[in-house]
Amino acid sequence: MFILLYIINTIMDKGVVGKWRIVRKIGSGRFAVVYLAEEVLDPSNRVVLKIFREDDVVRRSFENEVKIIAGLRHKNIVEIKDYGFNPMFIAYELMDETLEEHVLNNEISFEEGLEIFLQILYGVEYAYERGVVHQDLNPRNILMKNGVVKISDFGISAIIRRKIEYRGTLLKVGGAGTEYWMSPEQMAGIVDARNDIYSLGKILHYLMTNGGILPSTIRSLKRYNYPEWCKEIVYQCLQPIDKRPQTVKQLIKIIEEHLMPENAEKWLQLGNKYYDEKEYVRKMLEELLDSLS
Image (cartoon, helix red, strand yellow):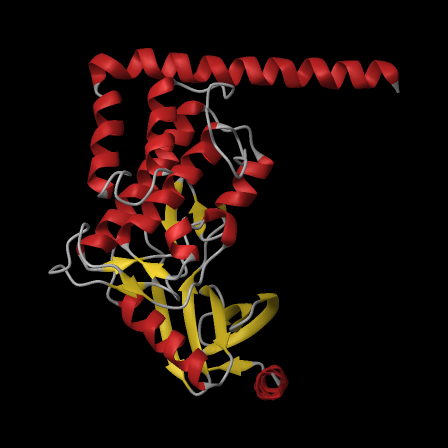
């Protein structure tokens, strides 16, 4: 920690890391401090600059993150603009907000929720095709800008080569990730592509309920107001690892089939009806509280 503080203080004194000038601090975590930065020669070119703490564990995480993300080029995955090793840093493309912020600040329609979820699925599937498991999918690691959804923070991902199929060998490692979104298997320290499918089920519920969080024990989704076929996806994703969907392609296929022209209008109308009802109830409660104040 003292080494990190020394590095950060030195950086702040100079204000420049590589070709990037620090504008302001955004936040910090266990492994890194995050800044808004601009290119010295072109201040209009702004990035998110993540500067990593110097120790052996962090260096392995850093080298892993650079290697993984630098090799991923997809419209739904955050792009690395630059990176360096002294200090260890990564410059990411700048996005507008996290999915968490978007949900907190907006009433998301059923149609928008599905569109966001599909973009997440497309990014995850692209990574899977290249042997990458994210292992920390949650609304803070999903970023948005102008309607485009991108996945970030592959720092604790596991490389699982294509020769290891989705039903293949489970690899035991030290557990990492954000607890609520993690599968029980991941909590036990197991890396497997199907851990991300568990997280995706919780993210779909989060989108369908405008930020809803599921209880620790799920016996039924009947009390939630969104279409049954979406509930079935959520329920299946949260099953034990061998019973949940085995690939992201399965989820994409289910949703795309429901959004085919002959099905889309019915399901979108039904889904948006639930959101209209929720908005009506919210307004009624606001009016009631105003009348009591």
